[in-house]
Length: 134
Image 1 (cartoon, helix red, strand yellow):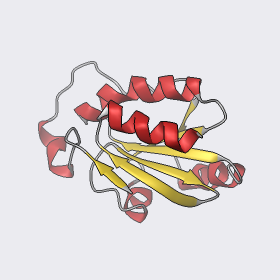
Image 2 (image 1 turned 120 degrees about the vertical axis):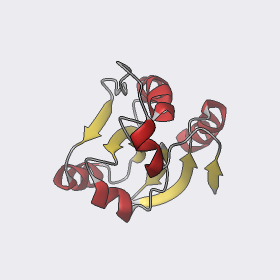
Image 3 (image 1 turned 180 degrees about the horizontal axis):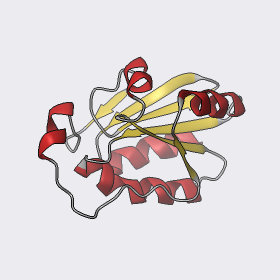
Image 4 (image 1 turned 60 degrees about the vertical axis):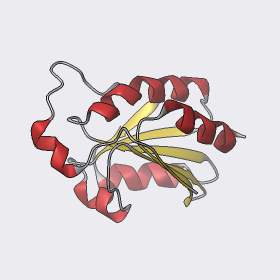
């Protein structure tokens, strides 16, 4: 199932984005992935567990706006592993996962992609999240 709503950024938005001091909020339960080695380690650790990956960009307004909500969910669902990948820092990984816009969230269990959500619509994201968590 693919869920996609307005509220996402495409690569072409990068040059015009100006969000001042706004930053992406990761939260203590969200693991920021900074290398493919770390990605492989986290995915290996996640065997048998549920994982949500947020592919985002620091210049993307919708990514910035949904990041505190993503951090809140990571605290609410501690049994789920929450990861964050910056598409500019790990472009090859983003391409491998066919990320076309940000934010893109993948819902993974046992290494298999179960669902995908593109955009910053919180209601749709939470609906997928609740189904995924059960």
